[in-house]
Image (cartoon, rainbow, N blue to C red; front, side):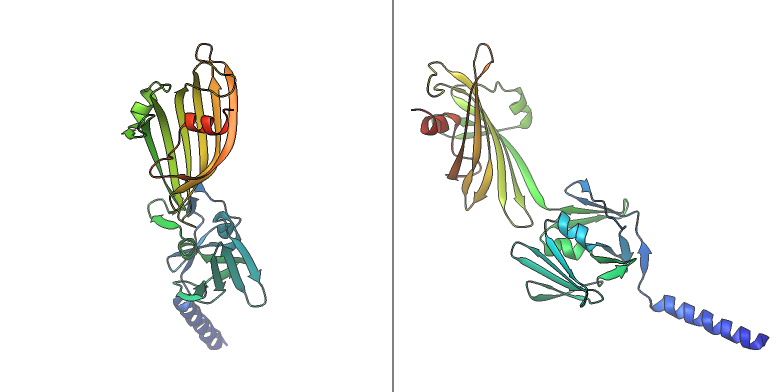
Length: 278
């Protein structure tokens, strides 16, 4: 009896060792953080590391990357869409498709604790995002856009630009009748290659529109999109009395297909003259 028990125990231990040897290397990765554009993402189930690859709950990561996702339980198929991109994965399969093209995966999607987890790097990069890993802090950094600030003067006579530093921009008198002071932020999305911008202009306006006989201090905010070098969007202009600083007028409107070549080729005075002077 003792001999039989010992034999069974030995066999059980051998099977246990074999199962560990051939099972995929999976470990809890609750310490792993995921950041998208500097924001820490909270998952309802922690990430796991499988054979050195980070897997995360599918729905959260797709939605954070502005994609729709569907789950087909019968075939255990994940289908995600964003714009013109369609991504398909199957639980247990190391083959995914992106717009019909087969892609080999390092690790297959898995169901763990009732949740469907997908490979984080593959999903992010398939949608166009940039991915970096910091092993020291156990953080995955996902970047969906690149942005750039510029500061400059626009000569109101010649329309020439003079690029300046941010420090100089902060020190300059914002109101001048011969040039416009501009801060410009433009970013390009890695996810869909769209370009968007936000600009703020300050200038002393000589003609403030109907009912204004004297110059006023003017602020203009513009935001919009850039397609093939043409900017379209909306603007808001605020005019203030030079002596008292009191608000005098607000103009709003839209613009379409204005040339955008390192800056938007329009000024506060031009927009007022074109759209708000009768």
